[in-house]
Length: 126
Image 1 (cartoon, helix red, strand yellow):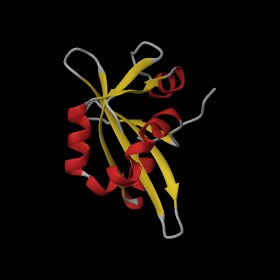
Image 2 (image 1 turned 90 degrees about the horizontal axis):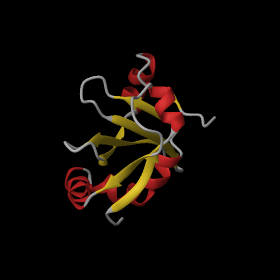
Image 3 (image 1 turned 180 degrees about the vertical axis):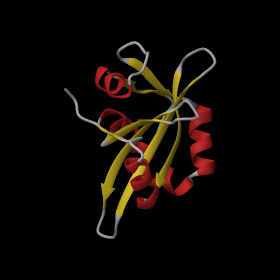
Image 4 (image 1 turned 60 degrees about the vertical axis):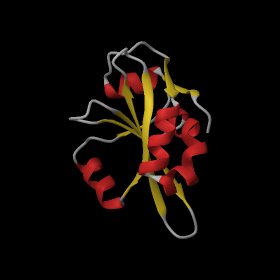
């Protein structure tokens, strides 16, 4: 995965999460973001890092973190062994530029807690 633009926050996400952002706000992945992902979640980045644009463009769920002011995109992947809930978290920089900051998996239990709390919103493009 190379640094650069990896997606955009489109009208559907803005509407679902009631965000006060301009439509098609670009999402970038910087060199320091990649380094952070490789350091903090090396297995997840190795397996799903190249799928970040896919996760951002076609998530199964989106959420707004209640305390960290981040936007979360979650894509569910299945393999022969299990389901993996892959989360890409976005945050705006001090200058207002939106970056993909982290990638990690969340357990089914945490996924269910988020869903029960109403935090996760099913993503559907209009």
